[in-house]
Length: 436
Image 1 (tube, one colour):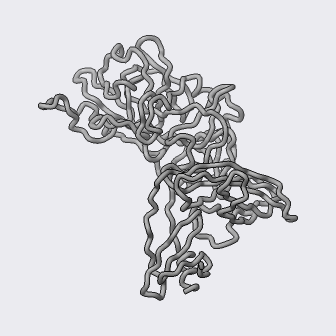
Image 2 (tube, one colour):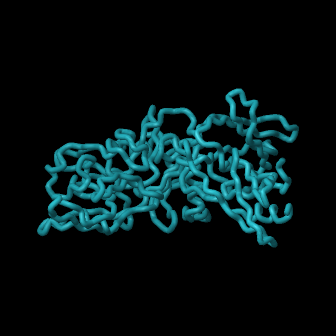
Image 3 (cartoon, helix red, strand yellow):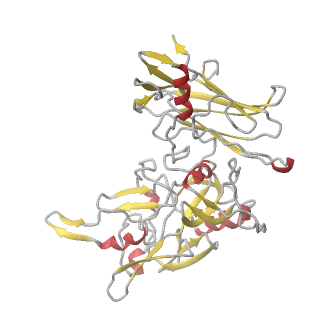
């Protein structure tokens, strides 16, 4: 039995979460300076609206956008129940300041006279409460791309999952292990382009990176008042909250980057932010009992040890695991979010970011953690610590596994981050040892 259990554990594939750890549901974990005193967190994707259900949401992935279907913003008809929407899909191109009227689509600028922030609405995957989000001003966009410290090295254009757009990095950026980034001010012609698969972007996002995809833009035919949506191949156009006179408003093109103005009735993309209140972002993955831990490498660290406790005095330890200097788990490596290896080239040290996902924690429970970096003498030379609270009443489905060479089945059990197997009525740990 022990050999079969070990084979299974090495072969185990666990869930990969596309979301990072949030301060508020729907917020990416990176912090971005938008003035000398203020920082914000970006939403997990562009804003979307479903007129048939009056529902707001953020796109599931940062690279998602609706596209041509925005032309159906006027697809409704009159019935015995009044005006009903025949288009059941989503919209993500809005006239300026239409947080109170997202389907506004006339070509008369005076119909968009005052700005109502989209962030005043309750967003289904963004906290579900009103006024958690807001739109950046033109000066805040400009500060982000041009005036924050080291600004030119914290953005560039690239692709994510085959979609073109702009990448912006948080103020305290540390690149994940084994990934690359070529900033806009780089003169290195041999550097790899900023093209990322969905899996690679997962780690970039966990490290705080934001992607602003190139989207369509919706306008109106002056004669027929017919909506047209055109893909803006070389520009990603995002509204600001800043008006320009009585008929216009400012928008931002990250690919340039620069500020422009346009008619208020033109439909453009919206990416919301929330003011960052400071403090560490808890590592809990929303609506799960999993936690994502991250730490940065230290030049003289030989090992890193993660401790998780069930009490604030940090005496009741429920989980401990050690990683080597390359971020590789020194025990069995069965979690796809476990840190990936990196190598130091030509003896030069560069700081890298490591991740580890702990799954199967108890519901509605407080935990405390510390991640210690130790040198060759086992002395602690770095420490990251914090507290988090898991979600309430999250159901963890039972997983049945076929063990190689046996007709019987095993049941995988997750308890406080530890994996156990139930086999023939007996429980075994990850090494195949029977639990009494």
